[in-house]
Length: 209
Image 1 (cartoon, rainbow, N blue to C red):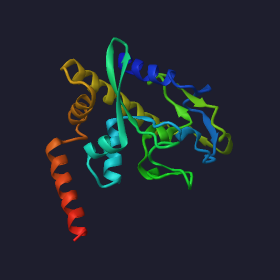
Image 2: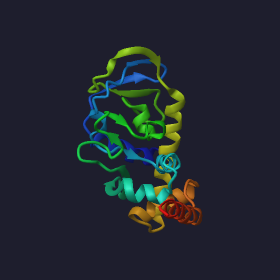
Image 3: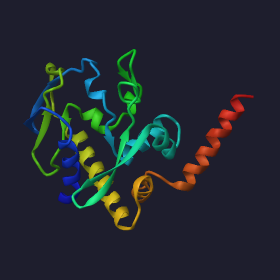
Image 4: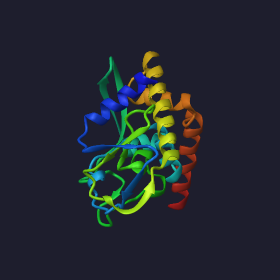
């Protein structure tokens, strides 16, 4: 698992945060000010996030990948890892409502967004990191670090990158590698996805006549 998480740490360290280490059994004071700073770039997400977004938008897994995501290939730790990222709009993440300064998919947004300003860089550590460049840190109610959500995030990121690595070894690359990894994990079924796409298209066609 260490080699899988080395990829996650590599990706996080290519971004610019002002991180402060905090024990997992500690507390955080945070209130979102809706400044939009954390939404300026599309977040790196997992196939679990894609599946939740697809379910929330009542669409297919592949539709979310094709319409709202980019798949970038990044060299990390002796292999080329396909990175799934939500696309960026004119100024913010594609799901950011620029006029209301709110997330359009708040109820089913990616786990990394739910956790922010908390960052997880080591799954075995009793410490997490807080991005103190966020202006909402240090204000609001003092609450317990959400360890259940952190545990879910660790499990999903581990499964995501492990499945990607396995599919990479089998020769899959880019978007195909992502789809095969999602199929292996069980959050994507090609036949069901195609059937759902056909049904959705027929419903849209019927509503127009």
